[in-house]
Length: 186
Image 1 (cartoon, rainbow, N blue to C red):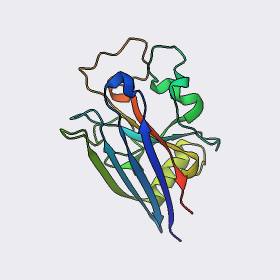
Image 2 (image 1 turned 180 degrees about the horizontal axis):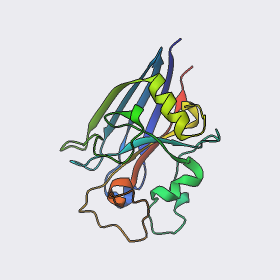
Image 3 (image 1 turned 30 degrees about the vertical axis):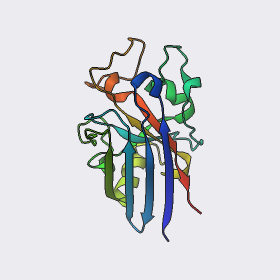
C-alpha cells in the first residue's frame, strides 16, 4: 500500500533575512522505499540549505514555529526557540538520510535565483532501524512531524543572541528560513 505525505513550506524569519523562502515537500512510502521530493524557491541564493524533519520522540504532534516562538525578542526565531513547538531535529534530507548524520556538507545548495530541488529514494528499513536506535523505538510518524529549511549566507549579520550552533557549524547554517507541517494525503 502506497502512503503519501505532503507539506506546504512557508517562510520563517523572512523580514530579517530578506527573502521569503517557500516551497513544497512530498514523502511517498512505497514498499521498502521512501521517496522524498523537496522544491524550494526564494531561498538565500548560492547557499547550502540544511533541511530536516523535526518532531517529538514521545509521539506528540509537532507544530510549526512562528514569530511567537521568539522568546528572547531579538526578532529572529532560532533553532533552540523552535524546539518547544516542533521538537528536535530528527531526519536530515542530505545525500544519505538513512545514515541520520545531521552535521555534514551533503545538503543542497541553492542556485543564483534561490531555487533548489532535492530528491532521494531512501531504503525505509535502514532509515527506520537507525531512527529507532536514535529515538528509543519511536516510529517515523511522518504526519506528526514538521520540515525545516535552514541556512543564510555568512555575510548576513546576525545578533549574538541567536542560538543553534551545531559542532563546527554556526547559526548561519542552522537558522530556520522556512517550515511546513507534514500531512498525510487521504
